[in-house]
Image 1 (spheres, rainbow, N blue to C red):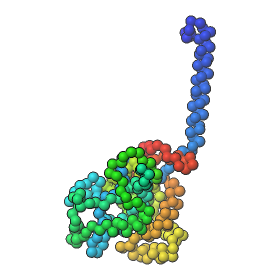
Image 2: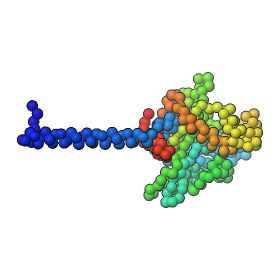
Image 3: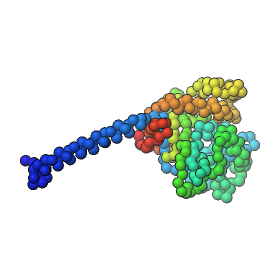
Image 4: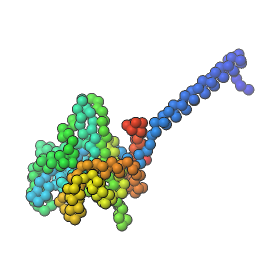
Length: 319
């Protein structure tokens, strides 16, 4: 037996009917709203992942030796370079190739534009390094900022060298998210991550020597974008299509003798940008091993991007 809402059973029946109608209207509004949201056309970007918590960037020292130049990247948060594990040394050629596959992004703060991915020079007064560096061969080298200036001029010609404030104050707008583009390579059961000309064997996990450079790459502001399988011939095709005759000639000579030469896609900006753009549009899903041996190890998660007018970014979720 149903208990009426009021003593008058007819009033109770009328009120129940009214509430039922209101509930149906409410459900219709929810359904309508749901379908209107779905028409935004959110799509899973299978090639885009995002990482952890800190601002992305490198603290570096460019060192000029008598026979070659080396760019040292310091372990994030490291205040003492007395241990080898606190340094990651790259030739200037490899460093240029690495940052060539990084889009540094930008924020707008107090009407000024700054790069999100920030490259900072270490300073002597920070006691991070000695004024004179001795390499493995026992040769002395000295800090030379011109090495960095020359690389940025060639690879990141539009880079604003002005540094971000140490502590962000007020509100800022993310104008363009920074990205790092990488490829995969499988050869004789060895599994390798390729960033520019840097090849990182992850078959048995990421070696500690390489792992710490991702401490300031795998951040919530940095997207890891998969370009597909590494293919040297395809890189050559983009150099031929978008480069000059000099670019193609340089590429052929580089293939014969790549030692101490800037990789072609680092030296020539347009072929590199066209190569990256074309590969990104394919939106290829990385192999399962890339997620397990690389992305999961550095804390990167799948990112979901909406596409209303091509400019909406939705929430970041784990995967």
